[in-house]
Image 1 (tube, rainbow, N blue to C red):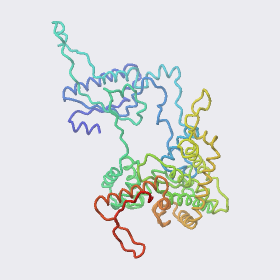
Image 2 (tube, rainbow, N blue to C red):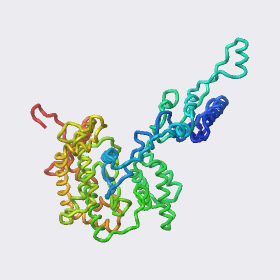
Image 3 (cartoon, helix red, strand yellow):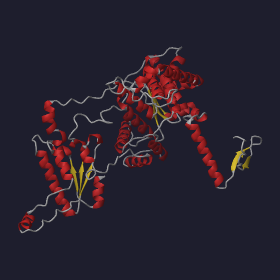
Length: 529
């Protein structure tokens, strides 16, 4: 982006690596900063402006902070932890982030603690390393102000003869910095007059991903149809340009290993699973365990398919990867920022489906592989009851104190301790519902499990083909909550639009099946609906 700006404005472009300011001797960094800006000012006067780009600006450090930065950095993400069923990859995004936050707070996952600054680190290493050396950051901030003293031999003579010295020229220097750790930047650097505009380079949209995919595929031989490229853009949310390039490269490697020069759709699908889930371990289950894992994942998949109006199954696998024996990976097809009670309940039912499925097919017996699913379900239910206002109580467990002098208590732990009865009742109701749902589709579970035992990996499209229905069919057939109201509002708006446009709304007669025009009639007061 910085190079493009320089090209459009026809101004010089200077690339700066902040680590170049680091030196074992104190004061060298300050000299390097002054030398850099001396060159920038010369270029600015010669060409009417200059663009300087600092890459990895967080390496410049901060004047007052010690240790690791706070905020979203230094915390674990969804990819850092997993249970026997790949943890919770089949849950909604909001549910997954809620679980991650809970595990961070409770210490189930501990990020690396930054070493405490000792006497030597505080005096010596802090001065020589952080920010490139003693005074380097301060020198940079001073130079960014653009304030320079009038100087030069001409001004000295002007002063000698009593004339006012010439003001310093106005240097046009555009500073552009890039970092993926904005929390570690010094606040003085971000004040107005220095770096006063911050742009977040987010992930590309679906159309942006499609164009990027087409751009990289045009560089290689491939046999992907436009429909497959469109589908690939849909199933790659939160992919950056580098991720898409890596995906195409991996697909090409898979095709070459198979003795082909052109990329085909199975190559892309396999490359996607390798990049997102990692390579499977070269192990094989005994027959009994293979069948048990297949039934476990098939129960998850059937429930997720029937209830997943807000999610879509991407892949189902029974291959062992790291700490996972199998997994159901889902994805969202819409960019959402909130999640509703009905969706949380669907996520809990998907988590409990493994326990209900194993008890259904193994005579009331179940494996220890459901432990992670039960923990996920309990955590989400505790958040619903104690934080999200989706239970019987109106009070929130957020902000409660562990003791008079201590910090805030974990809201999930507080809810599990104080409202365990309500949480258990909620889980029991949802478990009974998912048990009935799996009982109605017992044959489909066994059919899906048989396909998994044979192929080990199947896509969401194959799940839908085996089920013989569209994803979220049960939820869409019996909508409730905000989904039902939203559908009704959309239907009313469509009807009003047709009415205002002068069109006739067609209705099918239940007697002869003919289509007859219907004229909207306003109801009289007291007639109800």
